[in-house]
Length: 286
Ligand code: HPA
Image 1 (cartoon, rainbow, N blue to C red):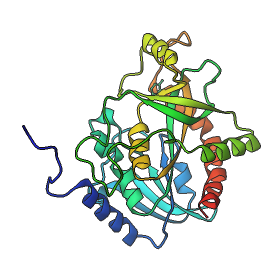
Image 2 (image 1 turned 135 degrees about the vertical axis):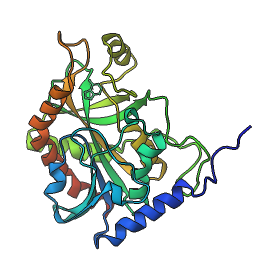
Image 3 (image 1 turned 90 degrees about the vertical axis):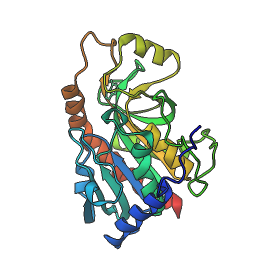
Image 4 (image 1 turned 60 degrees about the vertical axis):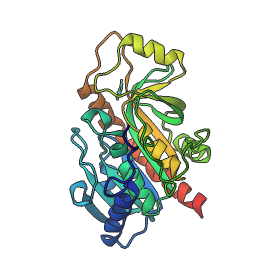
C-alpha cells in the first residue's frame, strides 16, 4: 500500500508560505480581503489604487489560467481605501487541475494574512424566479465535483482534518451585500450553488435533478476555493452572476458567448456591489 502523500519534497503548506512571502516582497500593502474575479470582472482590479500587478507565472507554485477572459494576474491595491488582493482569473478543474491546485491560491492568500474572501463566478440559473443578469449571494453550496482540496494527509497548520461546513458562507457578509445591493438598486437573491466538474454545460435532466436536491444556481468553480478558505478560517462571501438560465429552462441551447456577453452587461453592477461591500467587510474586521 502506498503512503498517503505528505512528504513529497515540500508540503503544500511550505509552498503556500513561500508564495505568500514572495507576494509580500512585491508590495507594501497588507491586504486582509481577497477577491477572486470570475470571467469578465477583471475591470475591478484595473481600478484599484496603489496597484501592483503580479502575473501568476511569477509567483512560485501558482497555477496559470488557460480560460478565455481570465488574465492570470494577482492585483494588489486599494479599493475605497481598503487594501485588497484581487485574483484576475482562476483555474478550474475542467482545465485539468487538481482540487489542490485550484485551491492553492486561496491558501497563499490565507498565508499572506487575508481573513475574508469574496469569490465571484458566472453561473446558470436553476431557480425559476431568477432572470439572466441577476446576482445571487451564496448561502450554501453542494459539491458535486467529486473532488476535494482537503484530500490527502491533513496539515493542521491550515486547519482540522474534518472541518465543519455549517457556516462556510459567512452570513453577516451576505447580509451586508444584500443591504448594499438593495441600496444600489441591483437585483440580488440568496441561493444555493451546485458545483459540477464541467466543462460541458448540464443536460436538462441534470438541471431538474439539481433543482430537486435544492440547488438554485450551477457552475464549475468556487467550491474548492470555499472549502480551502473555510478550512483555514478565512470567511467567505461568494456571489454568482446568472449569465444564463440553466439548460432546458428556455427553449434554446446555452453557449459560452452568451455567458460572456451577460457577464459583460452586468459587470458594472457587479463591480459596484464589490466596491460597496468591501468597506463593510473591512469595518467588520475592525
Ligand atoms: N452551467 C454551468 N456553469 C455555468 C453556466 C451553466 O449554465 N453558466 C455559466 N457558468
